[in-house]
Amino acid sequence: MSQREWIEKDFYKELGVSSSASQDEIKKAYRKLARDLHPDANPGDTKAEERFKSVSEAHAVLSDPAKRKEYDETRKLFAGGGYGRGGFTPGAGGGFSQDFNIGDIFGQANAGDGGLGDLLGGLFNRGGARTASRPRRGADVETETTLGFREAAQGVTVPLRMTSPSPCTTCHGSGAKPGTSPRVCPVCNGNGVISRNQGAFGFSEPCDECRGSGSIIDDPCVDCHGSGIQNRTRTITVRIPPGVSDGQKIRLAGQGEAGLRGAPSGDLYVTVHVSQDKVFGRNGDDLTLVLPVSYSELVLGTTVSVPTLEGRVGVKVPPGTADGRILRVRGRGVPKRGPGGGAGDLLVTVKVAVPQKLDDNAAEALKRYAEAEKTSGFDPRAGWAGA
Ligand SMILES: [Zn+2]
Ligand SMILES: [Zn+2]
Image 1 (cartoon, rainbow, N blue to C red):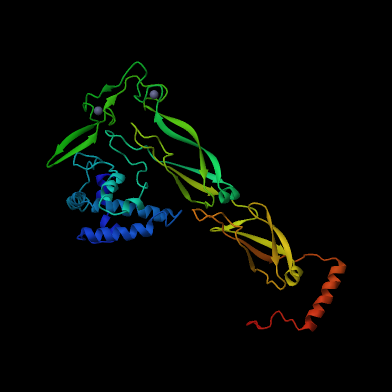
Image 2 (cartoon, helix red, strand yellow; image 1 turned 180 degrees about the horizontal axis):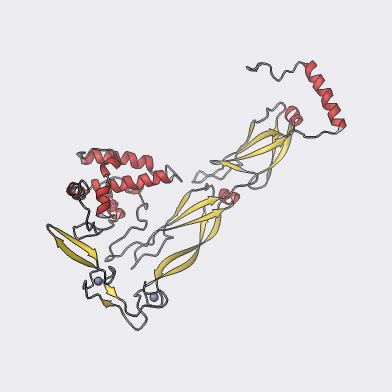
């Protein structure tokens, strides 16, 4: 996060507390919001996820007295848009890190914070910048896949092709043509930044000469054009558990990018899209389907064979069943996740199919029936409020 963002973001507002709130108030406000907005409680809700990140970001700063002081002072200093000319350089020498690692902050906070770490486990290491000097966890990777309706319901093993940046194999990441090496930038002495003093403040800017990299490549590697990075494609096979729903994001621990120098791998997040099925719909763990029936089948009762995920099952339609009624077949729905096992139910909605054409025989019989219905005393609009 840049200084500029620090100035533009109102962390107090994010948490709904006053700028004089105590550490305890901040903690309480955060815990409540974190619980309400947690992605596990709001699967697929990107708005909640964004809010969750903002709230966590705000808490990361405000819960650390030193960071909070720095934040308050920065805002005070630049209140009223005083940072016009020249602007801020993210990561300028003022002691802020350009992108502080939220994961690290939570890591520290966890020790005294009783279980909050579990709640937030693994969510925050996605793609943030990290200091290069210590072993670091591999980056988290996001990808998506589309599953058939029945695959999603029953679980499936799918190959995922992923492209991610990795060091160029030709130049081993240096960006320089093999046999040559980058030289230290003479303008910034390899720092990548130029410091300037303006009055009371020291500003740093990325070095123009080396574009902030600190080194100059005279002979760029032809394979990566001097970037030192190539996109590498790999295919991994992952097991998608049964019962995933459309838009759900699944975390596969340790399937992300490899860590550097023995650090653990990052996680893989797979967003699952589920295609529609011609027969089935889903309502949580319950499977739904619409069963076309005739009027006489509803009146007289019948047993109809309907498909399930595994095969077929006979559904008994009792005599006198109303159109639109839902018949429940227990245990023939979507397999449930978790140790309890079992499955949801199959919900069969009966829907009368009205014949568009009848042959003479059937038409005659129906007319006779209509007469008989009248004399039997059946009135479809008896008790109807619109009568
Ligand atoms: Zn290269
Ligand atoms: Zn330079």
